[in-house]
Image 1: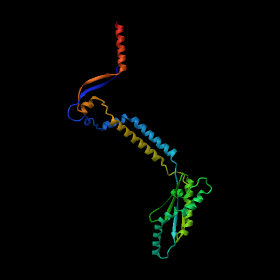
Image 2: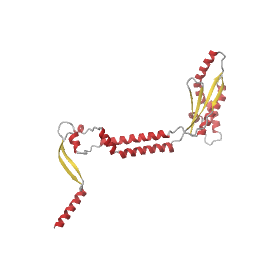
Image 3: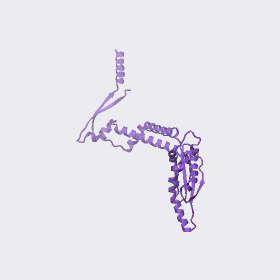
Length: 267
């Protein structure tokens, strides 16, 4: 059987510009058609982005571990009940001062010396300070010192060493701060806090799907090929004058050979 394509002869009637006629509108049926047409592209894009997200998460990004210790700071108490209440509120407000003090060289110098003792890779004050964060609950005299590092034991050591150093130096630096208590020590947590592997892989899947869909719809919208006669007659309102079949060259050669063979037999 000879396979052929069809060329449609048509003419454009009316005053509407051809550029306006060719503007494409997409309905629900066309959307599903585009999804079926480019399904392999969409799946491939999703798989590639998911693999990239997995490679970055498990092989490129360095895991970070976190450890926290909690401190309670009591200043010298007044015997008067009203004064004691005011003192508690002052202690709460002073926590912001403690936050600033902990990351300053007066504390970090001692922490760096103890952390770097006996280690080949040295951490300077700024590096250690960037690993530390201070937080507290509202209206609470307890605050947490949290350290993040690429090693769970290093994170715990930094948090504990910072708390211990602050406990020793705070009374000397700030008058009236005579009782700093460490109410819980940091322990190594071998579960990394980042990267979040499941979230990253999910982001890779969604991103790959969106990229695949975007490419599919862009390619479809940029495709100005007339795919069938109904598009010309129904969508564009043009009149069909007929159909001319286009036979592939290889089919013409095959047909010619068959005809020659038939004539030779008759002769």
